[in-house]
Structures are given as structure tokens and as C-alpha cells.
Amino acid sequence: MCKKFSHNYCYNLSSYQNAPLYLSETYLRLCIVIIPQLLCQLLYNFYVMKKILVSECLYGGRVVRYDGGDVPLLDPVFLKWKEEERLIPVCPEVFGGLPTPRADAQRKGDGVFTGAGADVTAAFRAGAEEALRLAVAEDVCFCIMKADSPSCGSKKVYDGTFTGNKVPGQGLAVEMLRNAGFTVFDESDMDEASALLAKLESE
Image (cartoon, rainbow, N blue to C red):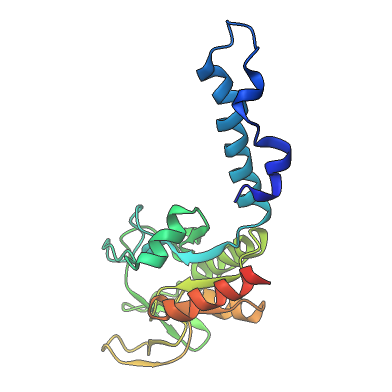
């Protein structure tokens, strides 16, 4: 990670053997080794590391699901990416101003409605636009979004009858992301996502 910057920052502590006594070895190590390493990491994160947009319910931590539940993705590769700080968590529904918990909602045509018939399309659309804005701003290389969601589903969504039936389709946020050219996976596609990241980072 530090290779690109090592000729500028990674000094040998022995070259400072004749430093004044008040410059302790701990202080010198902080100035000469630790701070440059942190700088290397920051530069790598900012300029080199590929970022990935992910559904916040998969990311874990803050509870954002409509039912107040928690479904973090515990795949080892995903957790490694999280530790590397390459994941950008988004919840389009919360971004759109909806509370947690909230009424279950499903797509019907171009709209999104609750089981009671309330039209929540405007909130879903506003949240989808914010998710897209973040994807562009962070220059993400692809997205991993929660399967079957009216916002984040990428293969199937519930059919709007609230009977548990799923049909081929995609959530509103995923539709916007794909229309903007982003590749979208769901949590079952980690092998494909990992292969794509490896390819992108080798180019």
C-alpha cells in the first residue's frame, strides 16, 4: 500500500541517531514512521482504492429496515471490504425521509405503495436519487444491494399484491443506478463481485 510513496516518506530511524536528546525515540518514530504510514493509507484510500455502494441493511450497524430488523452480510470478503473502508452504505428509503420502522411497501408499475394503499413513490424516488448522487460522488466501481427490496432489489421484487409472490424486476434505486451505467449485484453474488473488483484493481 505504501510502495508508491515509500521513496518520500519511509525513512530509516537510524539516520536520526544524532538527533537532540529531547527528541525521544518514541517521538521520532511517530514523526518518521507512524505519521507517514497513516498518510500513505489516506492517499491510497483516496486515490487508489475502489469504492463499492452497498445497502445499509447489509452493511450493518444503524437499523434501517422497514421492519426494524437487522440482516447484515457476514460474508468474509464483504467484512474485509468493510474493514478496508471501501464500502459506502446507503438506505434509499431512509434517505427519502421515511421512518424506521415503516409500513411495508412494494412496487406497482412505476410507483411504490404500502399495503394500505398509501403512495410512497415520492419518498422512494427522492432516496433513489440520493443513492445515485452518492454513487457518482464516490466514483463507486459497482453496487451490492439487498435482494427483493422495492428500492434495492436487482433481480426480483414483490409483485405489489402483498401475498409473498415475487416477479422479475428491480427496485427504484437499482433502476436509477443501472440507468446511470452502474453494475449492481445482490448479496448472493459475492463471487462475481469479488472477481470484478480483482479485475478492476489489476487494470
